[in-house]
Image 1 (cartoon, helix red, strand yellow):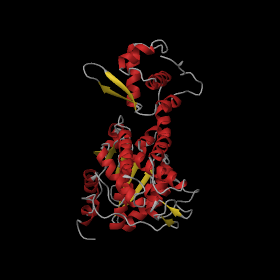
Image 2: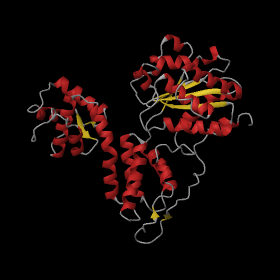
Image 3: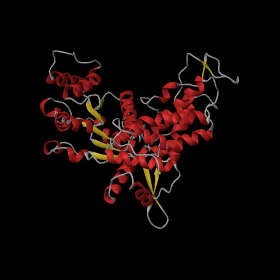
Image 4: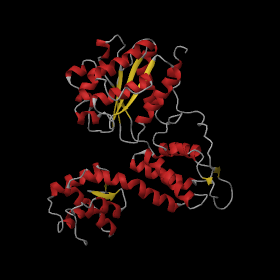
Length: 412
């Protein structure tokens, strides 16, 4: 490989589209309805969450930064470390996967290992995942101790004279499991016990209130000097461009009209999660195909949106206190009635049903905004307007506790 070739591959997110795979099902023709052996999907894999696009849009700065941190390992040194922070659906995992794919294609001087810490958060599970990617096979299920797994990893690194780069995705799950500091310490100090280059670690989190650098103890901080790389939410225009590429790659022409693509992009941008838009396109196209239609309709998008957002809404509601869920239900019912949604008016009207003071009310309201269930929009003059980000009926249903403790009487 020529010197400097690897970083140049990461300097742009633009280029030709991926070649599509052939489908065992006949492609869509121009007949009014689909036959049973026809499909709307040119390549259904494009809409899977595990799909890694060949070109990343609007993440050039982050890609260049990661490529810079990796580049010392191409010259016989060690890769540097990083913390990747940003809300869900902002391209953190996809960016890492794309770079790791390019590493495997371009060089043998670096061995990347991706660890999903939600699935693997014990030391043996994490090292087992690294071992499988470094050595090409899984360690024996029994009979091996942790040091045996580590020795297998470093033996392979020595044989190839390669540097190790580990991505700990959802690293905050390691903190919950109590293994964050021990694992960082062990991975970053492999070189002290074995004759290998120092590993680089990319720690990824979607928790904006969590500082992974500050969570490291003093022994880890002595070897963990990460560059923090921020992934901001995509704008509506950026979401639309990303979705348009997926549609071109994954669906046949004219399946998804441009006005519906615009609608889906607005929705996904409002959710600040491009994955919501990708899933919405997939589900809307599946509904049209199931009905034997050649075009996605507004009804398909509406139904798909409810199916896509319901799990997210339930997850957000699950993190609320009983008082916060009660307030959310009250806001939903008042919104359905078309009543005044000024923050002050909502508080005054809620007094008959919610035993909450003004301070607690504003704390609950801010918690709903932080959870992404409502938006607090400044009004002309003073105060804020409370706007639901989801269908009022869906909010009321999601915030209804199993024991009905947050039930609020109907009426205003």
